[in-house]
Image 1: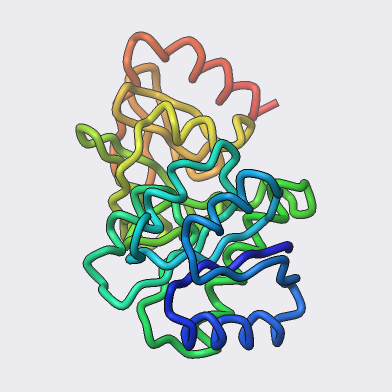
Image 2: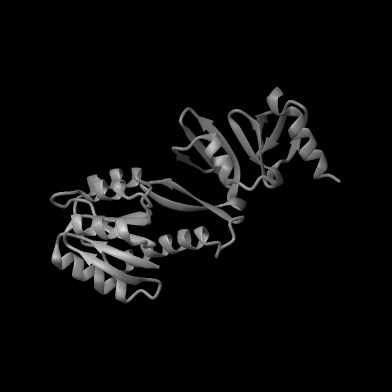
Length: 231
């Protein structure tokens, strides 16, 4: 991946450069201690991954990233953990709180590489999806999902052990990430994994020993899909 480092601290920039040189997935295309010069470079050159310090004079890393017409994958770096939430809101791949180790750096790069490969069709997209929680992108395997429940502006994803994670995402948005041959919406508040359904009738189905309602809106579609799987 072609990458650029922007950090106003020369020592931090040199350390990042050393880390980049030791990672075989990265090709360093530029490094800048001046955020405005880095911004100018990015407006004229295409890169795959950006390492960007959040707090800089003249322009913050957040402002710089928001100004880019074509946004590369971004890993934000900061000496202040309270800035991480803002980086997270900008769809950052990860954030690194200084000082960070080579191992922590490589783990962030590995996340970026997987997202990069998905964007470039180098990895199958029917095995997992990435969602944001705990202030970072996390991989969720489709096979682990049993059902999804809507809670206002959030969704709760339940796994095989009936454990769940809470994510700020709409039902419509998560449906777009899920393979339609494996998941179906049965109610405005529920999506289920077809292969995890234990039993069903016109009005409800059982999954993880829980009864999930099937709304009138989805009854015909659900019946057709489930009956088709019996043939």
